[in-house]
Amino acid sequence: MKINHVITSIDITTGGPARSVTHLIAAMLEIDTTLNIGIDTLKSETPITTTFNTSNSAIRFHTFEKLQRSKSLVNSLVQSEVSLFHGQGLWQMPVHQMAKVARKKGVPYIITPRGMLEPWALTQGKLKKQLALKLFQYKDLEKATCLHATAPMEVESIRALGLKNPIAMIPNGVNIAQFPAEAPIKANTPKRLLFLSRIHIKKGIENLIEAWQQVDVNLKQDWVIDIYGNGDPEYIASLKAKIKAANLEEQISIKPPVFGNEKTKVFNQAALFVLPTFSENFGIVVAEALASFTPVITTKGTPWEELNTNNCGQWIEIGVSPLVNALNAMLAKSPEALQQMGANGRQLIEQKYSMQAVAKQMLALYDWILNSSNTPDFIDIV
Figure 1 (cartoon, rainbow, N blue to C red):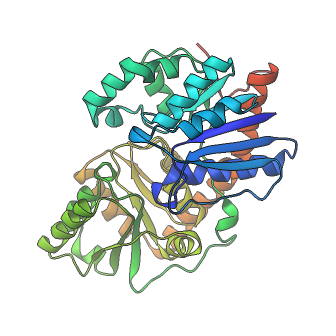
Figure 2: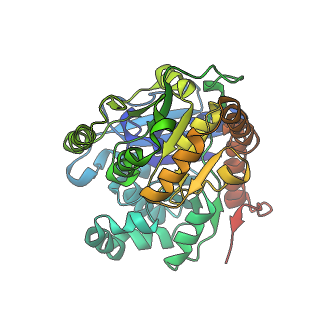
């Protein structure tokens, strides 16, 4: 079985998709040594990796022209002898070029939208996306052999566009080996509330700043908020201005992004994680926080209802008031109660979201497409 993934970038600064795709491929290669997987991606300054250190894999970096069109990438795809193409993301030329090549070669292909068909996401740059849908994007999706969603709510968003393809609902996985096997000692003086993600307007950071002003003074006196991430410098400057205007500079700090062991250390120190986002197809940072024994507050813009059903955090409505209520409730809990919630979250990740479990599902999807095996129970067919 020879699979070719296409993703615009695997640069360390691009966020969750680059991590989840590269980690997933590494896990699949470990499970099935007969598998051959390649990645075609555009050149970047700081890729997450440049090799999987196996003879049955390859990462090819391509130069590109205007609008991220890449003649080099197209030539590589045309010349490749693969069983299946797998494109990651939408609205981007590399995945569109992959879909065109796949159709011309008669090779089946999968597209993973990565949350880019969620209602909130479709309102951003709405006119450009409507034009892209008419010109090429809808056709690329419609002609795909299968679409891959990472949560039930994303399946619903895909179906809402009228797409009738089979949809595989396979979550993103977490490389549990990156996190401690036992609960780390959380920082206590002060206690740390962590936001770690791309700093972007959709992440709801303004809501967090506003909510923190309304949280009970007695509850938050031993807490600080650490915001880690990269983003547009002007936007980050505007957030810092809001923090200063609210006289919260001693309580809220915005810090540069962290990676690797340093990121794990930051997760381990946090007593509570918050992602007040407007829209996520999955939210890999939520899973990473839970893997580090850290309870989570996030919104119904994510698919993390399991925070409530597994008592490992709070899954709340989008907005300032629900966030204030959740923060007051979580900050009022004893350290022991937060530790128990953290342990519950870690157990959830081990049972359902480990990279090995997710990789086995993806391999089953590939086998179903290429070998007409029994239909896995995670595939939605209309």
